[in-house]
Image (tube, rainbow, N blue to C red):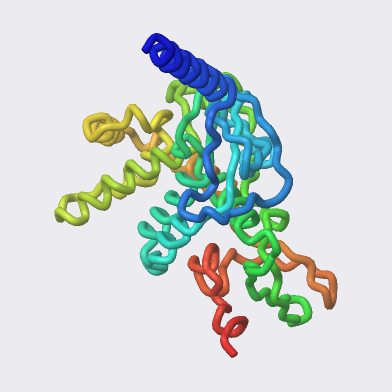
Length: 329
């Protein structure tokens, strides 16, 4: 009997030791997020860069880094330590994206946000944060980067037709991040850039000083949802405030119906000079954003510039719109 007790005790000690070793290994090697949980056969795409992050929030398998100085914003409106990693869109994201209503700008925006939310990881101030902290001008660039990882073999090219006004030549060109020149801050506003506040700090002779913020996805989403709710309820929508509103809020987390309403009411007191100044500044900021595609004509060499469009519409971003031609026999 004594021998049996001794064997059981030995087994218990051995099991406890194995548990201690396993726990220690898990603590030293945190679990890595799988790029596509719904697709166990998923293989990572491209060269992988390992990232060491203090809170372990950045997975390093199947994810790739985007240097913030390569973004349209050049990273000037983010904390200096901002890091962005992306992965390929998986079956879950593409299934959801396939329900996009192309004629509905709000729905198209929601679907792109879904892709960003699931396929990107943002770190700011050494903390994992939300894609909503990205400024709007960087959204499409990052979407294209995610698309590049999704179709790594370039089997689903994003194309548009361009016509040269100089010689009449028509070409089908591929849309890539390299031929996008999406943001050039107007020189009149450049000197008001505030490196510490990551915004434009406007100083005037007679109208005081105030900050203008480049709209973030979070701020735009909040205002979009306010407008959507008011429209569905048949409530009045202040179109004047809509033009300026998203440039007045720094942090989407602090936005509530009350803070939005308060800011809206404050603009009622603006006089003609303040309205004119704000109108000019916002027009200049909007003019700094250019979503046109620039291309050199292969026939005559002239520069061709056209507004960005997609063959097959927004769906072509993550769906094979030529699948009938390439797969049917």
